[in-house]
Image (cartoon, rainbow, N blue to C red):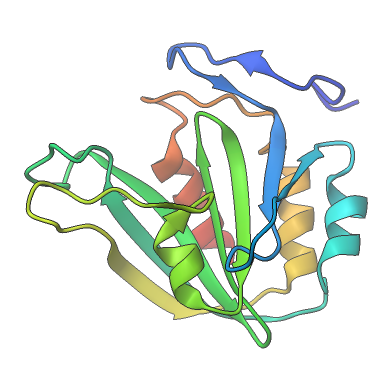
Length: 176
């Protein structure tokens, strides 16, 4: 049995923040409305019903943006996340103290430049989002959903030092 399957939230050790233990999915990030919270137990079935799971991931991009607006450089302090393209959509996937978030849009800017419909942070000089690397995808959405489930990413607690957004982005980027 998977750990924490029924829990809806827990306190993060070492990070001091709470994460939901749920995936937040915004299926139309460029249109009015709200997203869905999906528990670990519901992940494969519910997300599979909300997306076309057979969609092939065509390209994957690794992005960063500053953590704080007062930053001068984002070399050390930055948020990392993944943006990928399928035949039909642009997607982003990322993890922070709130949990894992997946966004989908017909317009790349809504998943690249925004997190849960809010503009991403830029630094004191207005520098913000940077594409660090990219390559062609090799998996389908179903394989990504199965990977997220099998690795138990929704129940992994966020830790600013040892299990943060960069660690998650690295794992997803390497998988896709």
